[in-house]
Image (cartoon, rainbow over all chains, first blue to last red; front, side, top):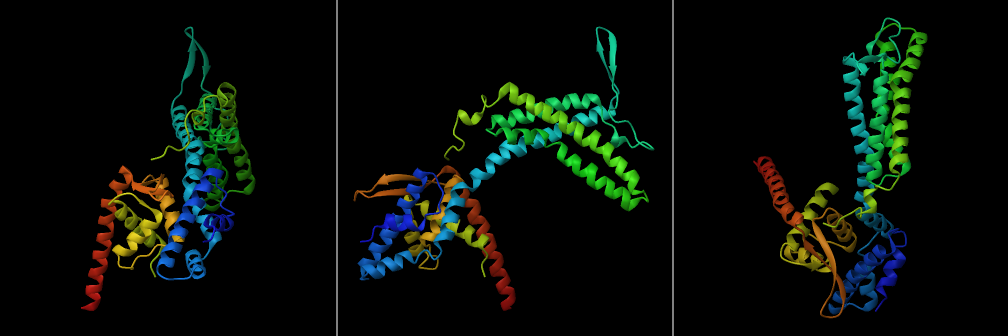
Length: 245
Length: 110
């Protein structure tokens, strides 16, 4: 009788699973082939023919390598990415929108000891004929440091790497970059007869007020979170990534 | 030609249905499906295990290594509670689809 484990191991050389996992898959498939072989032999087939027939169940071993790898890993690849990047990033984006809306629609000052210390001032004032979307307030930037820290902290908590957590902290500025640097300028050129020079100038201010300054604030928050928490609080350290069903 | 999504869907239902009767190892699952469908549905090693592993990942089935009476070490699969809950809606979906197809066939024949 053939050494089924050896035959399967040779054919699943590209499985790329962890050692124990790989050994279990190979043992299981070898057991299946052995049973097929025994059944065919009982039906009167020669050992050689039964071996060929059993192995013929798999026409494409390389394809099977890939299918098994994906079946055992796909959700593991996807799930941490969602938990470590998308959830903190989108949460940060929602808070970013909420804070921006509040600050844009509210005029307030900071009082300390009964004295007005600071009145809300736009970081980038209205340009040209004044477009409200160009304004961005100092208060927003301060709040964004907190948002960035929260996103990075959440990402780290879910076991995200330093890079993932910093990317998730800065993520809220990405949709703004797309809107303010591509969509709005393109729209201005298409809809209005505005010269490229004016649009170029607006892009610079938009980039500063709505993309670069918030990104810097978010990143500062993310960096702060790294300094405060590091990877000490990673949930991954306390429990395995995947609980069996 | 039947699309891969439909094939996978029917295959999942077939596996869940045979496991409803009790624990089975991979080879037994394939044999049981073949017997119960009188050879109309057949699983090879290449089609069965990727699907079983995916279903296990989703938490519908659970495999455990056991020593058989013959002394052979085998991985036996059983339905989890999530898998049990999945059977009824899957059956309803497929039944609805087949009913719709039968109606279409009747219209075409008429």
